Length: 449
Ligand code: UD1
Image (cartoon, rainbow, N blue to C red):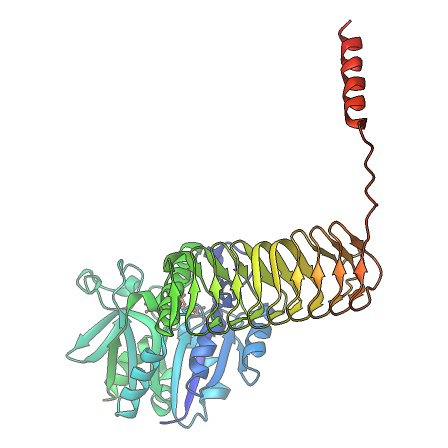
């Protein structure tokens, strides 16, 4: 396969998003839309050049975070897609192989589509245009085809009524042999309805030079361009459909696929069962044979084999759960390590904790990890029994095999195998309850007078 350079256009203003954030940084599946495109082309070992708009330092930072070697250039004035490509001249001038032009706001283009473009270029095409059939073609460039070749792309504003009847539109993704791009890009003018330098004019120039311009047709859902919030939600819905299929194909049971939401990097092992209404934020890895019951919210967490989670559990902040851990309803775990076979069945907050193996965390246990300024650690050993309704005031260390009595506020370390009682001793006063009742009734009678 020839070497690839991908030029990703990201200089659009994105005004229709009505957002303080550049449109290409809005997330789909927990990842900025521009990073989806980077990720897809990275899969081909492609070099990357990104063209950003003025003042888009945040886009530059997001790109270099994901692709440190990216060549970044700025388009100071937004003069059209061909002008945007020209800003990446330093990258394409010497590109030895094929050059792909993609849009940063079209995040769901698939590896299959890229493969088809590359295959046609390898087969001798000079350019390959990715066409699609949107529900409403208004506004898109139309592909003027002859057999399996493209003669020209006509922008909507410049098209005749007859050309506007064509349903096959330009997605904006175009592959070039490097020499074909270099042969046409500087000959593109701006005599058109918008007064812009259209990259789409490259097609007519190339065919005029006797070059071969092919097209492929891809699914409209994969080519959705995120330029307003409605399109963003469409992209999210499509992404989730792709991801649910991928996850199920890998051996995961989703009881109600449409109510389970994944992130781009969610990794789930085999024979995992996920009940309805579960949301996975970024950074989740789940081993085999795990059960996740309804209404859990999990992000930045590793869950060990055979664990059972939820319903209504929240796990986050770099949590690491060993194998066979059980977290039940209304348990929150933040930035904690939990050892094999440990259970926290009900109503707990475990934050900044390290908990050993086969420990039982009673209902209502709270790690008091924050004093308003600092976060401190709670360390609990193996085979510990934390009685219900405990407040564990960090920093605190509870030794292996220790017991803490229910209702305790534990402020000091507990040695291994000790019983810790951190509560007032119970006192019973025989017959005192009826005395209290009589006193209350007398008070009520006095008020009634
Ligand atoms: C473009 C295509 C059109 C296609 C449509 C698909 C051209 C002339 N037209 O139209 O055939 O059907 O996309 O969505 O290419 N951009 C820059 N700098 C610029 C202009 C655009 O970086 O000066 C980037 C934008 O950020 C965006 C992409 O190029 O990612 C497309 O720009 P947009 O203005 O949406 O193109 P359209 O006019 O819709």
